[in-house]
Length: 238
Image (cartoon, rainbow, N blue to C red; front, side, top):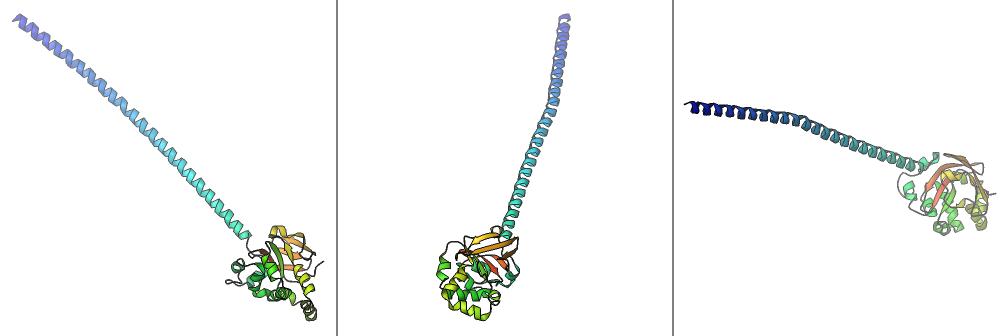
């Protein structure tokens, strides 16, 4: 009996020790589990921050690209506006058809002028002088084209005399033509005409005078091979 009681007490003591050890292990497991939660939270936070940073960076990049595209669009618009014809007489040019600005841009200069109703007298003079092919086949020209109103300033007898003399007419007309295409920014200055005369242009922006008394009334008109500046007075050459 004494022996059995001793064994029972020993077994009970061993069971208690075992349960205590298991409890300690469970507590350690809980602590470990508790410690892992902050780590997971920190990892989640880092992932979120990284995602936010990447998102902000991407948005900033897209915004920058948008600004760049808008800037380029503005530049394109400015370039387009700079290339437009200018002057009070431009309003009389047809809005569509062969005689419009877009229509004239498709044809060489003599043909283009013939389609513009404001240049009918000039067109007749060019044909009479036999200069149609010469002007149309040139590679790059600047033409100071007298409007019909410019020819109307010349006394009829004087105009008829010039129209009847091919040599004089040719010199008069080629005195309105300069080799090379001059933009409005290049227009001011002294230029040599195809007739060998001097053409002097003063002014800037959209206000120019040629040879001192002939105003550009519609400038920077493009044709297939020339830039045209319509003027209100015939140039007599110097």
